[in-house]
Image (cartoon, rainbow, N blue to C red):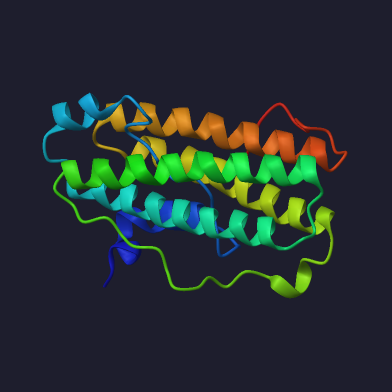
Length: 189
């Protein structure tokens, strides 16, 4: 049984992985730039915290690959391409911090997959790429909503909530780029 199949992480896994193969920005948690002291204070984290962080790291690495796919697709016009590269940079920062945090907590960070199962046949226009990215960002928001209460270390939960905010902003900006209401409801589910 892998850590993604353990009962107490099953709901987090569903939230993080959702219906798509990718969910962005997982619990890049603890230590967004400048939060290394938090990891050091935490000592060795509970195994569940490290597992959640590793699941988030895997999602971040997948997000980086998804934005790379979009950037290389030649479907994105200059302003949207710049936006995609910026968001990819955020995910790279999240991944770097997550990997360092996992190591500081005594875990081994997961590595990026050699390839991901992205819906290439469905990406034929800029709007298709934006919808794909927006769906992934919304999945990340939902994943964080589910992961925050699962952390044993409340500092990690706070950091995950910070990343949740970043993912929500990505989602809103992508919706705006599609000509949709950036914030379609008072609550995100």
